[in-house]
Image 1 (spheres, rainbow, N blue to C red):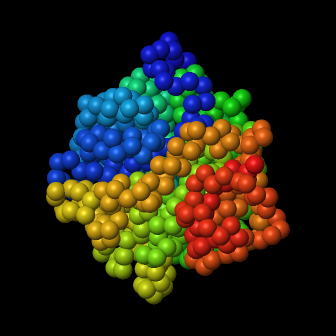
Image 2: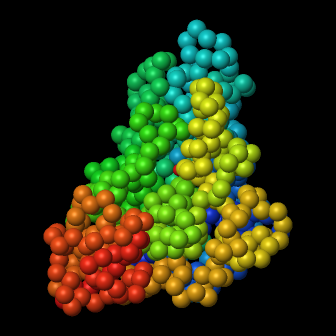
Image 3: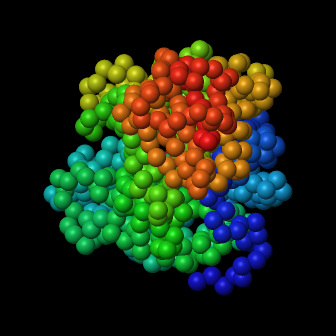
Length: 574
Ligand code: GLC
């Protein structure tokens, strides 16, 4: 238990403050470069703080800026208590926290503690079988009967997320370590209490530095299944560890211990757990305030609906609107009374929402970006805006493997080719779904390199920055930016948007996304045409809109009985 008193680190964080907040995610590498090395950095973020204040967001979440070999762009940390020189210094971070706090904006750090970098001193020490840190990671001998380090000698057949095997070979001790993402990201052994205490001490150090919360990377993978804790034998022919590590047996115990030991609830910090494979049931357990775990989780259900059948990484399919809105409604209903939702379409791991769920053609881009924003922000929960989403930034025109940088894209490409798939098929998948689309640099203006850097950008800009950029958007009262500003302001003003009950209407309609939010005697109706064709508003299945007030629309009030392509309306009913 922490010995700190409650002030001054709790200042500005009243109970439940995050329930009316909007979070803005920054991918520092791609946000704003300040020193001309082509890589975004912390002083660059501070330089843009007034842009963020103007948008009106309450919280900034920074993707990792810690010391890292950058195998997975910082999601492989070699020192949790220092900043990577690419991004600046601890003093730069302190200055950013101060600049944000001065404007009433809070700051959330990414917490990546399922795994470290293989360059972290803990892991470097762990490579020695005699060291006290050996048990801080998960080590296994080669498959029985195989020479360690030879093809097929891995302890089991499970693939990693970004590599063919979840077992990486260490030639020094002639054993394998478990690394679910890549060999550069060995998984920590959370069964070991010293590991947990080291993580909590590090978290307390950040809390004392003045941060306001944590976004917890793949946090539901920390409690490993019996085959990895040693409670059950590992089947050398098994290939399911990647699935079996989610929502492990001690997950909730660990989260409660973390909350207690670091004072997450005591200090009213905001916490969001990234939880692939989480269901409404696991989310209720995790976010029930009485259980003192986390405030909210990121589910993956709605962003994995477009996976093809089977396990081939490069298959994908279109998702009917009824399935997408039905899934969000399932989460709204499931967490209506206990727990809390996070709301997102975009982040640094997803292709751009306007290209994926909207229509990024010049004709429909602006309205579809606004309409996707409207439906998302009018759900109940905490909305997340990912850098550039507020500009309607699109997927980049990527056609060759040489244009990709992401370890995941390169792995999918290699896996597809190894499986004998024609390269065109792999490239078609990447062009639609790669994480690189989210990571092209932020488009600030129409000048050289979009104002992102004076050097050579680490990843090529999307060439459409000449028209899609923050400078143009801020001068245009009808821009996507202007619309997001209004959505954020509406959430701040309206208790019905913050806390109102959600009800999905017309669940089977494949063009219209319609729902109400009600609190007391106030009801709001959201009507959104999520298609590129006009739609007639059905006579049945919707409340009476006579005398309703149009709070925010994509179009000037027109024919009440028809919605133009990607037209949406937020109405307050009388
Ligand atoms: C999370 C991050 C992703 C990263 C992975 C491994 O999913 O969002 O970017 O590659 O964890 O840390």
